[in-house]
Length: 247
Image 1 (tube, rainbow, N blue to C red):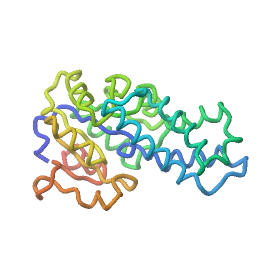
Image 2: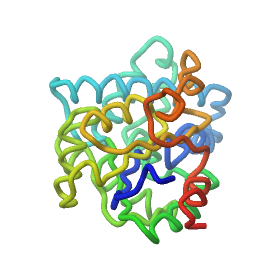
Image 3: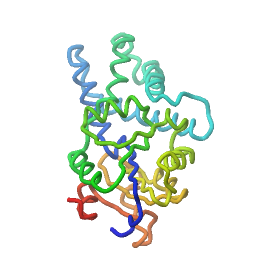
Image 4: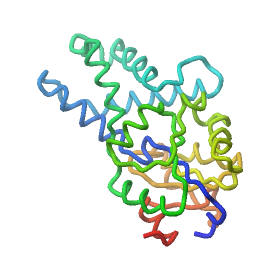
């Protein structure tokens, strides 16, 4: 994988790329609700929560108003969902304590099966950091929960925006003391990699089962060598590490 020659740091999208947000939050909501007899719809609830997150963070990235603390964003979305026709029937069971606990579920997401082993292998050569819309405390809590060996955490609240705002990519590279050309963005979302590439970063696309599924988008992503737009495509961090002779 000589396309990463000269790269000193790998920055990772987290939700979906490093951790399984969908399975993790669905499982936690299901367990927390079992005593109340609520069953059967948590996956749809989590997917809608995540879709609203994308819309709200994208609006802020484009100059709209809103918090750069993702806990605040998640709570605002949750409150709004529980007032919507789809989920209003849940309101009585969701007091303030339960809402806060549910927001905190996003701090304890599980990594994909290859995540920890792959990151530790990549850490042998590269500076590893997050470049995530998550808040700093969330990312630190998640790292401790899922054994994610970051050297540094870059978050929405630290840099002051959300992806794909240019401030996120350029700000992270600047704080590392590196030109963007010496940084590679690793993500399961093509929009994220397009933004990173537009600022000179190398790009690694990781196929994940929950990400870029709309309109078969994942299947259309190709490497530059095959006429596409990313530098590398892999199915896991361990595959990336092996390709770099680190495993």
